Each structure stands twice: as C-alpha cells, then as structure tokens.
Image (cartoon, rainbow, N blue to C red; front, side, top):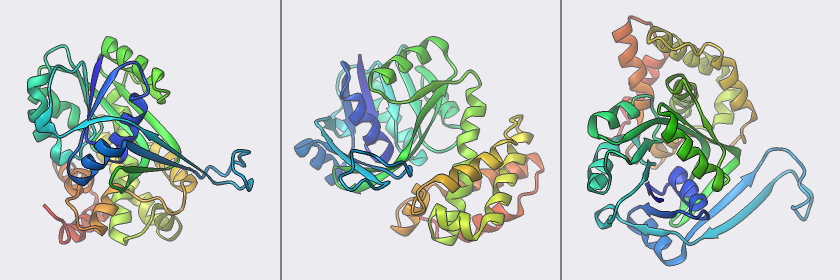
Length: 312
C-alpha cells in the first residue's frame, strides 16, 4: 500500500520513521528547513527512556537510556503530492487540517482510509464533512517534538495509536502498525477513547501554558488546580453523553509518572510565540460548557488569560 503522513513534526515524524521500515511505500509531507534536512539526510529519531528501569544497554548502568536512529524517508511538500494514497494520516495541528486535506484531496478517493491525529475531539467529524473517504476516529499518546530541523526527540516510553469507527479499515491499519512495531489499539467506542486522551491534554496544555512550566512542575505545585480542570472537563463530557469520570485520577497518575521536564505542544508553541491550539484545547471546553449549561470557572479564567497571549 501507499501511505501518506501529512506533517512530520513530533508525532508525524516519529510515526513516518517507523512506517518507513515496513513493506509499504511511505511518503512524508513537511515544509521549510525541516523538509530540506529530511530530504538530504533522512529523519533522525532520538528516544529518551526515562522509565526508571536500569538498562544493561547503558554503559554506566543508569536509569536513563538514549537511542538514536536515522531513517531514510521519502519526503515532499504538499504541492508536490503525486499518485494515489491508500492511507493518509494527518499529523498536523488542528488549525491546518482543512487546508492539508484540500491539498491532498485529488490523491485520495472513497476507498482511502484517512484519520487525524490532531489534538481535539471533533476532527473525525470534520473530515467526514470534507471527504468521502473512509474516516477513522483516532488519537495518539506520545511526548515528542522537533528538536531541530530533521530531528525528532521522543521522551519516555509512552506511545499508543488508538483508532476505530470502521471495523474493516481499522483492521487494515492495525496490521500496518503491527508491521511497523507501533503499539496500536482498535476501540469500538472510539468517541470515548478520544475523550480519554483529550481530557489529559486539554487540562495539562492549559495548565502548562498558563503557568509557563512543565507537566511535572504543575503537578507538583498546582495539583488542586489541575485536578479541578480535569473535573470540569469530565462534566462537559458527561453533558455530551461521554462518561470519563475515572479519567481524573488516571490522568493525574500519568502526569506523576512522566519525565518531570515533559511539557505540552501548546505550551511550547506559547513559549516560541508560534500559532497555537488554544481554541481547540481550552476554548472548546468553555464553548461546549456554555452550550450544555455546565459551569467551568477555572477553565474559563485560564482560557481568558491565555487568550490575551494567543497567536492566530
């Protein structure tokens, strides 16, 4: 099969590098110096294992292991897309999903499997409006970012690609992921699965950006505020027919066990004054809370303050 990975940032770059090791033809799409570096030298993946387990691979026997791999990857800009794609993974930010789909739309048809791995809970529905393709609902658990042009840094062991909505298409994608040794799970209730990811990233993206600090820092110093944000998100989800009450404690436990200096992509975007996903990760909760008559005072306060710094 021919697979397109649109966006070779922290998520897409890591996934594309692993898919490129399979029998399938993989084409990654990026832009700027990052694209030029990948075209010239391949894509480099640096993985930091901060799991706390002693590894015999590390020469000093410490609990931190760094593995670096370089993968040759066919990479292009979207305006150079050619041929037909059987699977398209959109690994762009939420605000680029529509334009990215439109750029590749002439290279897919109603049999193509498409999915968005952008943060948020509505991107599958957005693709169904834009496209006649086979759309899967999906999300990904990973902590990674572009360290420099051509280089992706992944923190810790966390990786899981979760998707569902169409049985046969999910089975096909699962087989591809298995071949690439990418941990993947098919969920029958894909809507709830996506909300389980969203609650964590919404709360911690908001908190890390608001306090301008890492996940470890906000967990340690602003535990009650983070827990309140999680509870507010749960109530909005409940009003929309999704039960994720158990995810409050699970999200806190995840944060506790992540490397202390881990942060969120939205926080990094705020730090670097780049375009951010504030409206998707914080504003969406405020908007839907108002629609569903749910009180979310802390999210509303933080969103309002962050909105003053927001870059369109």
